[in-house]
Length: 168
Image (tube, rainbow, N blue to C red; front, side):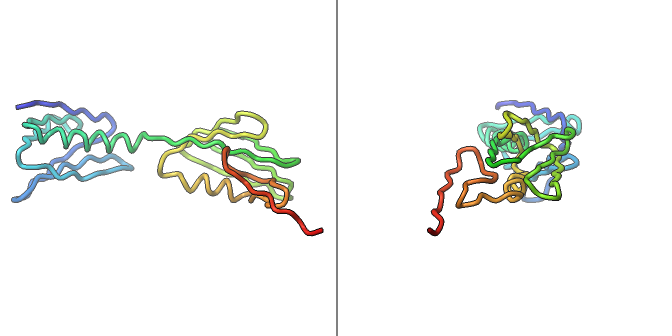
């Protein structure tokens, strides 16, 4: 018999038992997961954040599932956004807002939450975001499309842009 202890600081744990199976419910205000546990694993809930499990070899699978769930929450992606063109500016007003100035009469302000934004150079932005905020990058890139004739606009750092020749 192996014994493992799991302590989840920002989450609460509940155990539900049916006639046929046992479920482990891990949750907080924004995230939750429901894991099915085999009958060979003995679960003891010490507090709402502290779990103790006894197993032969099946508990390792449950432990790996819990680790995978927690890694998904804290797994960040990185993107560099580059822009070219005259008069294009990016201003970071506060920790939660960014102003994009692209030769237009109206400025575009983007507000975010749980995203780390860093201005590397005059024409490059570094963004660190979670899996839930992939549409945030698409929103930024859609503010100023790439012009296929001049190659000006917003693009990802290593995105390949083909230039089209104009009529003569």
